[in-house]
Image 1 (cartoon, helix red, strand yellow):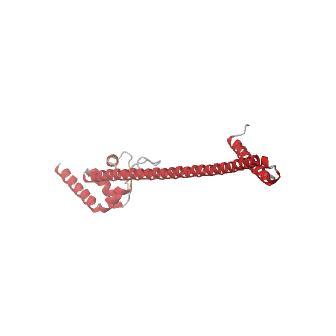
Image 2: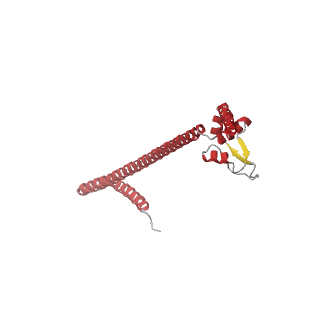
Image 3: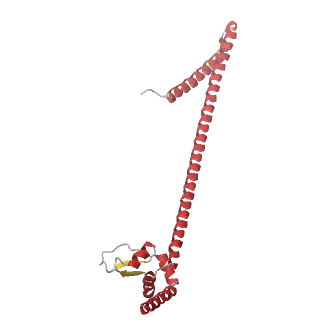
Length: 214
């Protein structure tokens, strides 16, 4: 495994600091022995001292500038990551809100369709044959949401086609088959029970009148 860029950057940082310290130490040493140097060579010693001092200061300044740049880049990266996380979180919340609104809209459409379907089904109660009316009158009279009868009952099958009763099947005998009124239909039948009982009585009287006529 070869060292990565971070390793070389750390080595460069250490070498820069060591070289700065060495330059500073050399400049200090020259300053301490400056009085012992012959007068003819002091100008060179001063130049070397100033040179090493300048190089050391430049090294230290360069290291400080690099540290500041690294800090600023790190802060910029952190801020960028924070912004991305905030944007991602906001986008996720927006997606969740849009999904929730879509689900609510879909549920509302389903409720509207179901309400429309029920209105259509309930409207069929106003257009029943005498046999269908008698089937309903029997349930209302007995106050029973379920009527047991022949599996091939003509009024039962007719009402099932109109979605006014349900026949989910049974393990019982075919002469004792359950015909069940849906809850929303049964509620209306209880409210209009007297009406269907009266219609059934009228139908029975009309049937007897026709039988006597014949």
